[in-house]
Length: 110
Ligand code: SF4
Image (cartoon, rainbow, N blue to C red; front, side):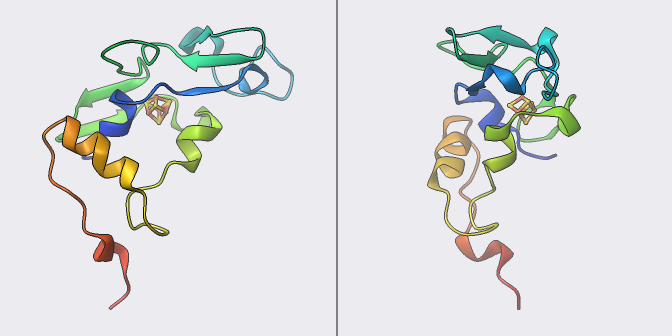
């Protein structure tokens, strides 16, 4: 809610069957673009300067995913660095937006 860097750094691609075009999918078709015969991407992320169109707000201040309950697998799998172990990709995205590193110990129980 206070970051959003990863939503505006990576290409978010996934099997098209996750879209609601498929009976078992949930990602709104209006939010995706076809990548190829098997994969789709979140609209806005297949770009030189990616920013998912489902992301609302200002990165590093206050953001929200407008389709949070229906977001695709890569978004569910991408955790904050240290949340359940290391994820340097998180800090890479943060650095690209001028945000500070997250300490690996942030989520360690005290
Ligand atoms: S679908 Fe939501 S969580 Fe996934 S990249 Fe877009 S804004 Fe971020």
